Image 1 (cartoon, helix red, strand yellow):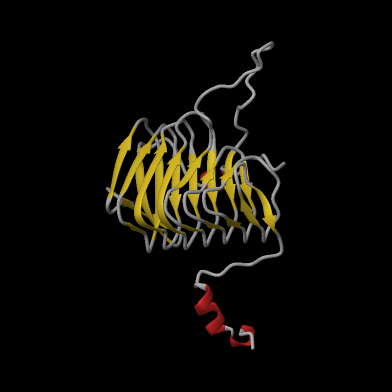
Image 2: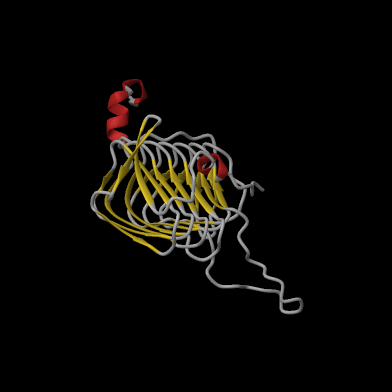
Length: 230
């Protein structure tokens, strides 16, 4: 099971000792910003960094940022309606790649320190997506009292992943490249293969050897007339 942390790959080029900062990243150039358009940003700690890149389009947002948090939105990051992001846990890392497009989303990294939510490029989601990298409460063994549900790393989502309506991605979920997560699925810690459809509660692999395209089926067939059946 993939359970390693990769946050340092994104954090290592920044200094977290200069207060709470927002930057517009233009190539390798970092341009200080005072706000993020259409977003309310509230701080629950110090020395955090938020990176936004060109093409950012957020209709409405509320961001809660904690101590030493790192939040990054890649080029053309789009939220069509609303984003609620809570990164108040110490050393939280939340990263979205380029060309991500989301309807509405709730992102929670507010309980356990040092956890991450890393999402790749070309991510697409319908409404009511939930990304939550911890459970918020403890389940322990009755005899030893040892916690049974401590998160290992958080959430990893690869490139070109599509999440349907009201999907929930929970702690230690790792979704590979080119997957589709079916509507209302609840994805936890389980092995998945690239190019798969993932669905159910709890989510499992439904179909493998697939690819997906952002256009609807009718348009896709028009673009590929050789697929039209006689």
